[in-house]
Figure 1: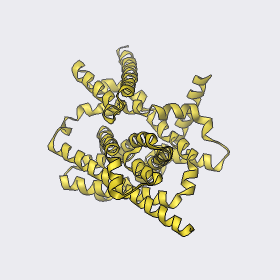
Figure 2: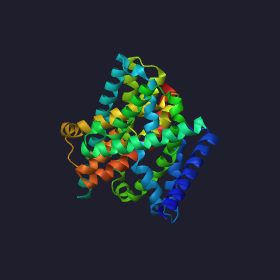
Figure 3: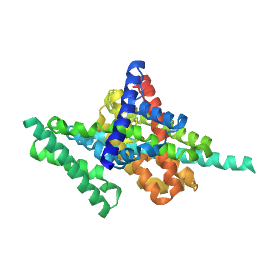
Figure 4: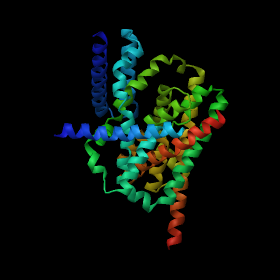
Amino acid sequence: MRLVRIVIHIVVLYVFYWAGTWIQDVLQLPVPGSIIGMLLLLAVFVFTAATPKWLQDGSGLLLGNMPLLFLPVTAGLVVHGELFSLLGAGLITAVFISTLLVMGTGSWVTQYLLKRGERYRE
Amino acid sequence: MNEWWTTAAAIAGTLAVYTASKRTYRWFPIPLMLPIVTGTIVIILFLLVSRIPYNVYMNGGQWIESLLGPAVVALACPLYEQRHLLKRYLLPILSGIGTGAVIGIVSGLVFTAATGASREWAAAVLPKSVTTPVAMDITTTLGGDAPLAAMFVMVAGIGGVVVHARVMNVVGVTDPVAKGIGMGSAAHAIGTAKSLENSETEGAVSSVAMTVSAVIVAFLAPLAGNLFL
């Protein structure tokens, strides 16, 4: 019964999400509860015999259709006519330039350290 | 009765639009035809033409949206399955992603300050290099607006895919691991899909980078936002 497995897997993922938001709430953390929940699940994989296979039907379905899940949110842009303004265009340009910088520096640093690592090994 | 009907219609309609836009993307696999782009446009046009208010649509939309939290939790699965990559290249990978995360946040702060944007806008720009659901959560934490965050994430993802090859040439990066780090840290899931087409290693590294970067930015962006916005 694949459908039953999918539902159970999603319920388990939901429990981790709920635990994450609960921890965020109690400890007053600025980190999103979803990320705390993800780290909790990761910790379970690392420290117990549990493997991602146990959740693969549910997790695969959610991760494979992520765009569906945020379509209702992006549709909220309908109330954001102000994006079509000089400020909106400026910010989109800013995001684009920042993306170039992140990509260039991240890759460059990684390759630099990879090469240095190789030299040490020789 | 009426509310029950609109809820069902919104869910069914969103599913239908998503399925159709996914199929369209298979025919025209270019970044501007991604389901999130075409799907968003179709739903917005539909709401505008039919004059259905957004909050009425969200009676159903919120049920779909409620699966985003569990989806972020599920990111632990692919990350754990790629743990050998992290173990093997721990220092280069973490340094590369960390550099990207810091540069992204700092340049986001500087550029939004330069454009004179309000705190609400800046909060939507800050997390733009991480995967959409996490970016939306970070923006909400900072008092910004989730749809705006999603929109800037899309700009970063699509822009990143378009320029990736050229940026790698400019900085002289040829290593597939390093290429994947740049893609995953800057262009998240949209970039990772493209990296998977380039090579298996680049795709796997990009998916690791996307998730690790989301964790780092989830810790740093709220901190930076509360200090500087």
